[in-house]
Image 1: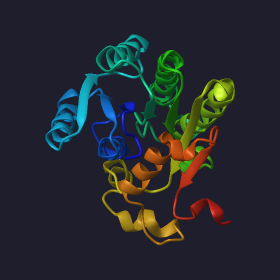
Image 2 (image 1 turned 45 degrees about the vertical axis):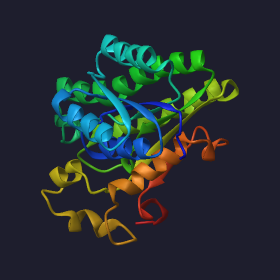
Image 3 (image 1 turned 30 degrees about the horizontal axis):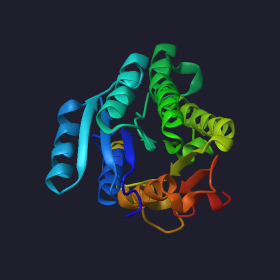
Length: 250
């Protein structure tokens, strides 16, 4: 198993790609601390993993609150004795609208989750990994964090910032046995995609050269690989998982 004896944190674990990645990590042998603001949903996931023979606990966490994130990492270290890997998946779609019409309070609320949540998480995860002798972090960006689309500037700005945070932290710790990468999914069959496209996944697939949306497990497999020793010489990379979208022009 790729993550045997590894101690892992997954934020945003209650649904979507966070949930799918937590399940994949458990199958690969990781001991998990699952974090989400939705305690009831993440508790159900913990029960499912433990029932299937995995090892998981949960910590209700609001990633926009630094003390909450510090508590999450602290509980992980106290329970398992350290931290080896983390997938920072917590995120929201955020407010939609053109730049000159958006209320800055709504913009800030989006950026607090995407940028602030990722920053808080990395800050305390890296501290724990330095104590453990190293580790691997994967952050959740998006193809919209590598390009742009009209009407979604807060989300796009946040995801671009995650790419910058990822690369900066990777360089800061490249010589210290901590790898930091990000994934940049295109349209993936998740509750967020269905909300965005009003339940019509075929429309979301229209711009994908593979002519389909991705499956959550295809992203989860990439997260597991980036967290594993199989990617031991990869850091500072933002990996598109997009069916070829970013390869095309126009």
